[in-house]
Image (cartoon, rainbow, N blue to C red; front, side):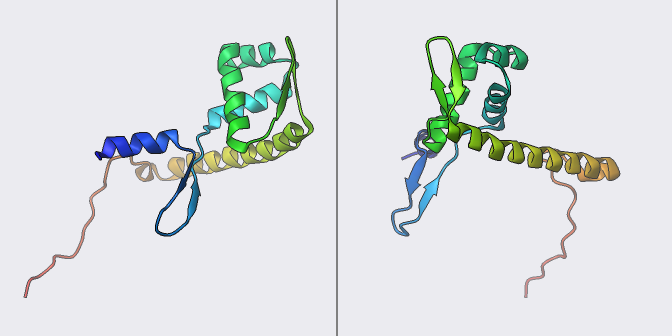
Length: 139
């Protein structure tokens, strides 16, 4: 089986078990965007308002909310014909997501400060700075 086929299978699978070790691995398929969309929905009066604030379609917002629910295996939102509201579990989950979002924002600010202090530290991904290693000698 080629490498691309193996990658494809892992992208479709959320859970995997390593055969020899019996270790169970959970691959998170969420993005920070999904979490941001979910938080925007939780703080808005309705889904249309949240979608408008985010600049996305209602369909994109609904898919993000579904990915969050699927990832964690809980019904976080109760959907009606024209409205949707958070479940108790959803409200508790929002509190945890807000803390995570705050932590991510703080970490991002630290990175910006570090880059401002030392511009050389912000090498682009894929770039390698000059590394000086001692010469190996063969004997």
